[in-house]
Length: 62
Image (cartoon, rainbow, N blue to C red; front, side, top):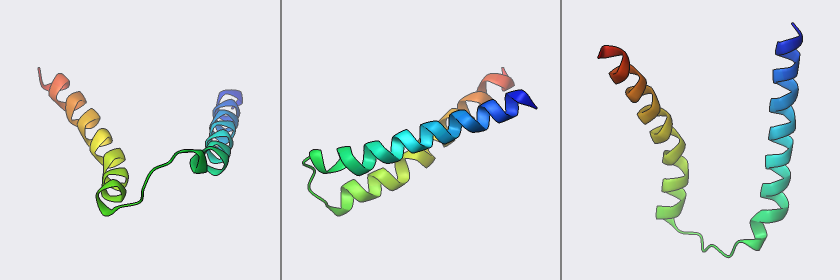
């Protein structure tokens, strides 16, 4: 039970730090908003997870 509580606490701390970084560090980045950037940022996490899962399945098949 203690390891689960520790894991949840770590996720909470990481999430809070990421939120603060986005809120206060985001405006420092001078990035122009366009459709291709938005599409890339939306699809990139799914593509990375898909590639990682495909790699695991491929390795287990060997």
